[in-house]
Structures are given as C-alpha cells and as structure tokens.
Image (cartoon, rainbow, N blue to C red):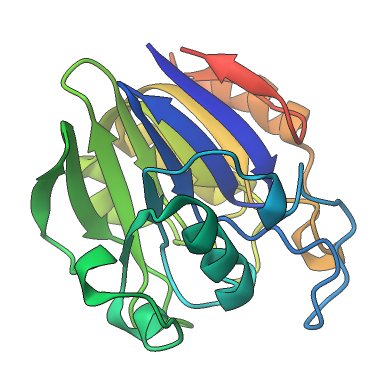
Length: 225
C-alpha cells in the first residue's frame, strides 16, 4: 500500500514502505514570483518527517531553496535532484544525490529510477519512479507528452494537467494512453491563472477512454492505494 498526500500544485508527501518521500515541496504561500491562487496544505515548517526529498527541476514553483533548506534543517533528509538545483543549496555533499536520466539506485529499501522529462524551459528536468517492491509511483514533474512515456510502468502516476510549459488535459490523456499505470492523480493546475483546468472533466474523460482510475485530491487530502 502507498499513501499519498497532495500538498498543492505539484507537491506530494508519499509514504512508501517505511519511508516518507516529498516530491517538489514548494510550500511558500506567498511567493515573490507570482501570486498563488490556491495555498499549499502547509508551509515548510509543517513538514513533520522526510526521509527523502526529490526535486524534478529548478523552476520556482517546484523548488524554493528556502523551503528545502528549512526541511533539511528539521529532518536531515537526503535529497535527489538535478545538479542545477544543488547549485542553489548549501547542504552537505553526503546528503546529495545528483539525478541524471537513466540512473537507477536503491535508498534504504526504495528503488529509484530517474526518467526523462520533456520540459525544454529547464536545463535539467527529470521525472522519477519509486518503488518498495510492492507499489510504485511515477512523478512526472513538468513534462510535455512524448513517445518515451510509453516506457513508464507504475501503479500510480502523478501527472500535470494545467498546460503552459507542461501537459494540458489533452496531453495528459495522450500520456495515459501510452503508459502502463493503474491509478493517476492530477497535479499542476489552478495554482495560477494560466494553468486553469477542470480536474473532474479530466477524470470523466480519462475514465471513459482508459482503464486508469483517476483520483482528484483536494489540497491537504490523503489517499491510500
């Protein structure tokens, strides 16, 4: 069983095996770059546990150096991220794992694969597949739909649907048709005016056109799969 909590935008807390993993923990309710229309579930101070923080790329709505530093100082977590993320962080080398597409490694019982993301606005965007040997989760980060997604196999997929430099709903439907996944949770929508999407419309279309179970989570909501 895997437990997933939606923290808002593209941020998730995942309990897999005995580990707690944070994906793209952008938890600043008042970022200077752009006003959030939907607040996160909590701030970085609200993070209680994090064995591993996994960051997909360097853009502000996926990586806030101040947030990540606070989480590290509270949890002494290990971090997996592209090199250009670590260039903005002052944490010990012993706590860093630089992510390159194609990497596969194990972290204390969690198998990790670093997979391709098509997000040309970033110089090093990646996605991740994590597994405890029983359940697996694919975190797409920011990516357009592309043929390489046909290589993705996981129990749960976390996919953007809001468009603007990443998949919109049509792209996410196409991606689901390629991937071999059982469940999908939409993310990266409605946080800003230019990524508006109706997740329930997406859910209806996806469940009509595929066998994938789509789960729409409110910010702060938890699901077990």
